[in-house]
Length: 102
Image (tube, rainbow, N blue to C red; front, top):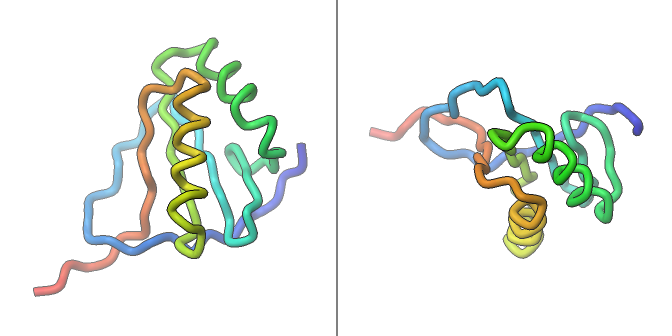
């Protein structure tokens, strides 16, 4: 796998950051549709089997899903389905935090 930095323009919401977990992996989808797991590029057809292997090692695994806000909802929904089919029961959708408006 290649390691590189993906630029993700996260949707901005006013919410608390999710708590850190020991059993978490990050799945990222950038503006160009490229996928990564924990910063390592992965082919779309390898996402589900890779997550299935991770879940088999630790059934408490949580996926933190980061998707560029330019990606259509259908692409994000497809990722959520693949994550679920891989046996991951817990998914956190990561967003960029902004100050609440008064």
